[in-house]
Image (cartoon, rainbow, N blue to C red; front, top):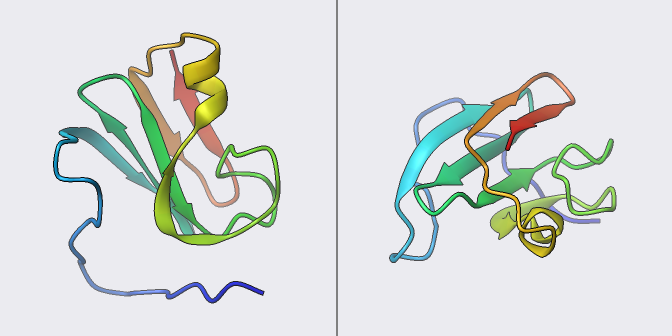
Length: 89
């Protein structure tokens, strides 16, 4: 099982340096960011599929949501809830 650190204080985002983040949203145990290039990256607890990677795996590292890229969708906004992630494309 993956170890997921839960932090009750601000932390620096560990994203590739070339990405420029336009929006951040935090759920109960997961986080999502939208880049200026219209991509969505998520990480944290994924038990209910809220990370959007097609599985229920958790991750401490930000991962791009490949399904949106594969469909040619440009992400404009993200809002995380307790165990959900809503995306406007």
